[in-house]
Amino acid sequence: MQLNKDYEPEINLKDLLFHVLYRWRSILLVALIGAVALFGYQYFSLKSTHDAGKLTKEERQYQLDLQSYREDLESTKNTIASKTALLQGQNKYLTESAYIQLDPNAVWTASSKYVVKVDPSVMEALPQGSSLDPADSILSAYAAPLAGATEEELIEAFGLDKPEYVRELTEVNTNTEDNSVTLSVKGADKETVQKGLLLLQQKLEALTEEAQKLDKHTLTKVSEDVSFGTDSNLSAKQTELSKNIEQYKKDLQAARQTLDNLEEKEEPKEPGKHYIKMAVIGAILGAFLLVF
Image (tube, rainbow, N blue to C red; front, side):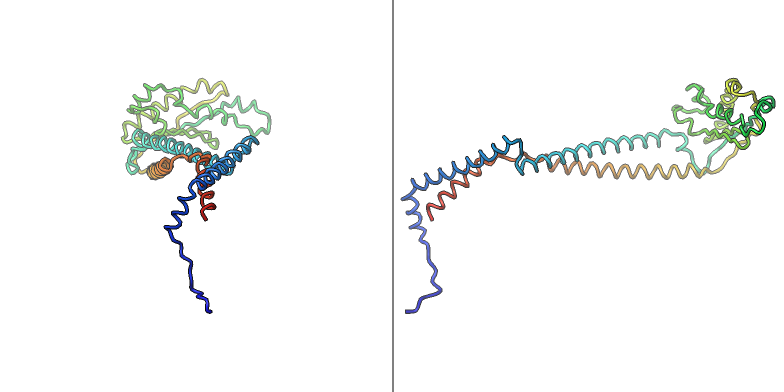
C-alpha cells in the first residue's frame, strides 16, 4: 500500500466551534486562571522591584527620555529668548546709533591734538638715571573727558535725541611716545562735528586742575583740523552688523522650528503597569492550551 505523502490534515471549523462551545466552562475557567496568574506575576514583579528601591527597565528609560526632552525644551526656549534679545538689540542699535547711520563715503571729522609737558622742576626731582616719565600717569587723567558731560550738554553739542550713542562719534587717544592727547569727532556735517569737538575740548581742559595733582605740567593745543572723506571702519562695521542680524534671524527661525517639533512630539508618556495586558495574554494562552 502506497502512502499519500501530499496528504494535509484539514480542520473542520464547525467541529472546532462545537468543541469550544461544549467545553466553554473549562475554557473560561482556564482562561481566568491564566489571567489571574499573569496579572499576579506582573503585580508582584513590579512590587518587588519598587520595594527594592529600583525601577524597571521601562521606567528607567522613561526617566531618561523625560529628562532629555525637558532639557531640550528648556535649552531651546533659552536659545529663542537669547537670540530674540540679541536681534532686538542689534535692530535697536541699527536704528538709533548716529554713527551707524552715517554714510561711510561722506563723513566729516573734526580733530585736535594736545601735548602734555611736564614742569622742569618735576623732572629735576627724579632720581638720576630714572626712566620714569611722569607724563605717562598724567595722560591717563585726560583719557575720558566726556565722563563729566551732562546729558543736556551732549544733546546740545551733538544734536542727538539719544545721547547714549554720542561716544561712538568721539575718540580720545593718548600717546606716551610724544605725550599727546588727540581728540576727534565724526558726523554728517561740518557744523555738528565742530560743536562736538568744542565740547570735547572744554571737558578735556576742565580736567587740568585735577590732573595737576599728579604732577605739575602744561596742556597745550598744538593742532586742529576739519576734514571730509570716507570711513572704512564704519563701512566694515555696517557690513558686520548686517551679517549679524541675518544670522540671528536664521538662528531664531531654526530654534523656533526645533521648539515646534518638540512640542508636536509631546512629552514622553509614563509607562503603564501592564496589568490588563498581562491578564489578557494569560487568558488567551490558557484558553489556547485547553482548546488545542
